[in-house]
Amino acid sequence: MDKLQRLRKTAYNYYFRKDVQAALAEQAQNKETIPFYFDTFGKRPDIIEYPQDIANLAAKGATSFHASEETWQNPLEINTNLKIEQLNKLRIGWDLILDIDCKFIEYSKITAWLLCEALYFHGVRNFGLKFSGGSGFHLGLKFGAFPEKINEIKIRNFFPEGPRLIANYLKDMIKNDLAKRILEINNIKDISKSTGKSIGALIDKEKKFNPYSILEIDTVLIAPRHLYRMAYSLHEKTGLASVVIKPGQLKEFHPAWAKPERVFVKPFMPEPEKNEAKELLIQAMDWKARQNAKKHREETEEKKKNYDHKTRIKITKLSTNMFPPCIKSILGGMKQDGRKRALFILINFFRSLGLEFETIEPKLKEWNKLNYRPLKENYVATQIQWFKKQEPRLPPNCSLSAYYLDLAICQPDFLCKKIKNPVSYVTRKARIIERAEQTEKRNQKRRKKYSRKRK
Image (cartoon, rainbow, N blue to C red; front, top):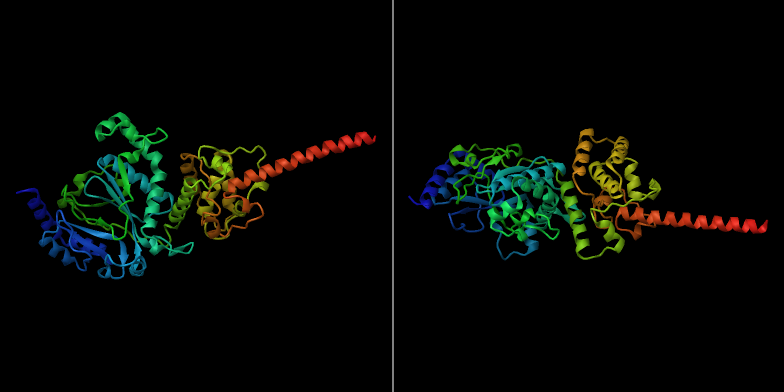
C-alpha cells in the first residue's frame, strides 16, 4: 500500500469519528471551508453545515479540511469578482491566526510560548493553541475579542491589515527573547550547519542573530480568503492531527500526541471577553505608527536622537512642571477605564527620562492609589518585571496614537503643538526653563553691576 492509500484509509477511519466530525463542523460555522484531496483543494467557495458532511467528503477522498480566517454572512456568495466594498458587506469579522512556520519543532515551541506570553502581557487570556500537524503551531483568537471600531476604523473591515499588523508587532516584540532562547539550545555555528545557511545569512544589520532567518510567523499568507488547517484536521505529510494543547503543555509536547488514534477532542478557540484584545490592537497600531515615522524620516534631529531605544534622556533638575498635560492628567489618577494603558505610558515615559526602577516603582504605587479603582498590585508588579527585561522605548506618539484621545487625557497647551511625543515635551520644557534661568542670572549680574555703579 502506497503513502496516498495509507493516508486515505487513515483519514476515512479518523473522520468517521463523531467527536472529530462535531469539532470540525463547529469550527466551520459561517466560514468558507474547503476539503483538501492530498494534493489539490476542492471547489471554492464551499461550506460545511453538518457533521455528516465531514464523513461524506472523507468517503470521497478528502484528507484534510481548511477554513477561512474571515467569518461571512453567507460564504457561498463570495467570488473572485467581488470588490473590496462588496466583501466588506459580506464579512462579519475575522479571527486572528498566528501561524508559526519552522522546520525545527523545538524552535517552534519556543516561539509559540513567547507569543503566548506576549498575549498574556496584553491582557488576552482566551486564545487557542494547536499543533499544526507538521512542525509548527497555530495560535487563534476569535474576532469577538476586538472592539467594533477604533479611530473611525471598523475593525471587521480591517482585514488583512489588522491581523498582519498584530502579527508583525508581536514578531518585533518577541524577537530579542526568541533569539536568546534559540541560542541557548544551539550556537550559531550549529544552527548554520543544521539549516544549511551561512552565518552571514543568519545575522541582521546589527550583527545579531536573526531568529526569523530560520523560522517565520506567517504574515504574507494573511490575505483575503486565506485558509488555514482546521483543528483536528490531518496533515498530509505526517499523517498527524492538528491537535489542541494548552500553553503549559508546550515544553513536554511530542508529535506522537497527535497520532489519529490518540486524539482527544477539545475546543480550539474559546469565547473571548468583550474588547479583551483592544489593548493589543491599539499598541500594534501605535507600533506601526512609530515604524512609519522612522521609515519616512519625518522626525526632527532631536526626535531621531531621542527615538533610539538604547538612549535615555538625563535631565538633572527633573520636576513635574516639565511634564506635558497628558502625563499630569494620568498622574492625578485615572477617572475612567484605561488604567492598563496609562501604566504602559507612565513606565515608558519615566524610563525614557532616565529614571531607574527604584525611583519608578514608588511613583507607580502612589499613582495607582489615586485611580478610581486601583489595579491589582500583582498586575503592576508583573508589568514592572516585564519592562525590566526590555530595552527602554518611548511612550506612544501624540499625533500618531489613539492612546491619549481614547483615554480622554489629551489637553494640549501651546508647547504640545510643537512636539510629537511626551518625552520631547520634557526636553523642550527643560530647555525653556534652563534659558529662563540663564537669562535671570544674567539679569541679576546686570542689576548688581548697575547697583555698584550707582553707589
